[in-house]
Image 1: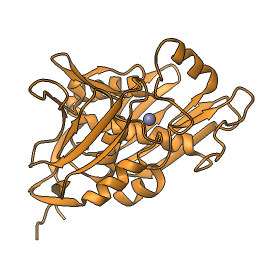
Image 2: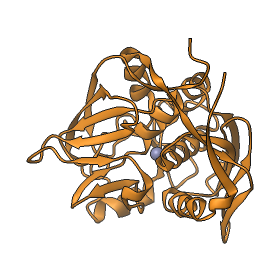
Image 3: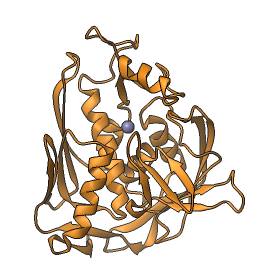
Image 4: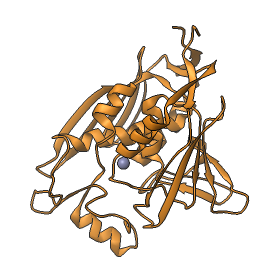
Amino acid sequence: MNNYICQKTIEKAVSCSGTGAHSGKKVNLTLKPAPVNNGIKFVRTDLPNSPEVKGLFNKVVDTSMATVIGHDGVIVSTIEHLMASFAGFGIDNVIVELDNYELPILDGSAELYASILEEAGIKDLETPRCFFVVNEKIELCEGEKKVTVYPSDVYKLTCMIDFSHPMIGRQEIDVEITSENFRKEIASARTFGFFQDLEYLKMYGLARGVTLDSGIAFDNEGGILNESGLRFENECVRHKLLDCLGDFSLIGMPILGHIVTEKSGHDFNYQFIKKFFNQRKAWGTCEVKI
Ligand SMILES: [Zn+2]
């Protein structure tokens, strides 16, 4: 029996397929077990020599619509929901093979990722997991946007959003990141958008794969276009937490800290990660004894 928290991978390979939200392109995804210190590696099997891109903040090339990583001209787009699923289950090492450049949007949530990871099973590896330990508060503010991390013995995320749409308004959620909480509270929360924005995006050739089956669409009259309604009353802020969990996982190791975000998005989260690495005195690294 180990006396430390160990790194984890999956027991066996699992697959799923779908369509990229922005590209509208079909993609097949296979998640495979990986050895210690591999991290999350994306492999583009559709390209010659199957190039790899690591799921790390220093590979981020675009954060305008989704989180996109790239290396030597090879990109992997919209990684946040899958990255959040690995972080939610505490999985450190996986090879993600894909045969197009954008991950599937699926139903707009991480529900299918969570269920295939459960099907794969989670395996302990015989090496300690290394954590970032936050010793001093780090904060990034810009207008109404704010991300702060405080010292904490556990990894906690608090997210706040505020939209004028009457079905959203101001919402806040506070979750300690454990597999159980991720599965129950976060994984099934879908992405959301506004009908007028969708028309605009489609006009510019974006959101090609977006339908009412790939997320929540709010209309201009204060209602919702999806017939089945919301999965949670505060589904939007739960999804925001899912996105933040995925974005912050690009730091590359789990965090012992409490991250609080207000009106943040992929780009601001990425700016925060850069600030985190510049505040070298505010954090350290450690293994966790159990
Ligand atoms: Zn999202």
